[in-house]
Length: 267
Length: 276
Image 1 (cartoon, rainbow over the protein chains, first blue to last red):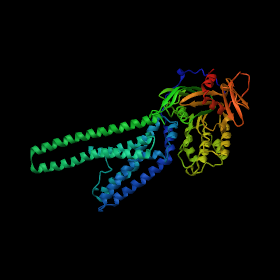
Image 2 (image 1 turned 60 degrees about the vertical axis):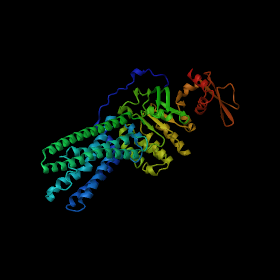
Image 3 (image 1 turned 90 degrees about the horizontal axis):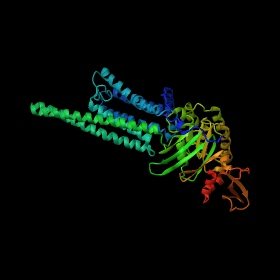
Image 4 (image 1 turned 90 degrees about the vertical axis):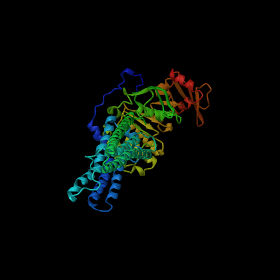
């Protein structure tokens, strides 16, 4: 064994190696996680298909609204907790952090799975069901628009983002927490979701209240009241927009922290 | 080659795990020894790039170990004590993990498993701690990495398992690879070590090869303790006395005795002698 001191000086240390992004490694990351994410995706698809069929076959049933709302909420929370799959039934972080893939590749794997694959698995069938419902029954479903968010207004967007804030919190806890990751991931994501959805709900309730108030104002035909209501609604939309921006900022912050957690590899 | 350049690491809770670690290791098999809490595991993490030192750096084959470069990361693997490898069986894990390690040898993996009396299809959750360790070792020794770090690999292994591990470790090693083994059971692998890193209280007291030691220290057995010796290690009915080397004698390093000497009241004299 050679024990002579190497001539390589510290100046020669290659610390700034350029890493080219590799799709091949992205595929390898999907393969590495395949046993767990395949099972999760399949479960989510089956559940969302079940919810969608229930949606279609519950036409004019008395339990239609309650059951479908509840199942829709379950589906949304399945999305919030989807990053738990990366715990792989134990603490596999050390193996994952040593995996020869760049931090960007690992990060994009999480992003593509949680922002593309899982939303499709959760919401694709309900979205199709909502599209089919009026064609089959020649009438709108009472909860139409719950999953078809193409025409969503700012208030609906806020409600959707409330779930996304929960999901990114869950992801950050899964990647970063040193202990009790299941509990922390669930607890913090629920707290963040409740916090953000309560604030969204306040605006939504206020919106409904103001709409009724506006109708009342029209009924008495008082120009001064109508003007005040219009100003109030306008102000409320500003608050909703601010809250939307806050949630987007929070989501970006959590994603940034998750990336930092992956890239630093500190264990 | 591994260069440890003045590495210091403190955990977020304020516990200092590494203080000014300096050393330089060529290829070979090294013992990493130190008392509980000396910082052995943290040093392994730093070498593997899993702990980012506040000061200094660890350079493996000319590249900082914390560098975000997949090509370089593919040359290092750390097997921790009680590490969780996800998968139903070790072969399931290998199927998803080996695409990242092109030097992995399926043949060697199967050989290693057979040596431990396993097929590789045993459910990992149903294996005892010792058998789980055997499955892990059979796998990582077939990975073909340049730098393999093993944290307490012989813990939980039975006597036969330790012997088999010693054999498959020596056959799995490539001449240009480096293995650093953190263990308290020095005698299990003593004959395999080409060198050692000895730690005490977050500091690295010695990092070098057996030649570095024997060129400066002589290990001699005697029936009595010698007060002239730098250190006398009681070994059954006799003593192993450590003296400054005159350069003539041919002695073999006793790593356990050296460790005890470095942790004795005379440790400074030993360190000074090794530093000459």
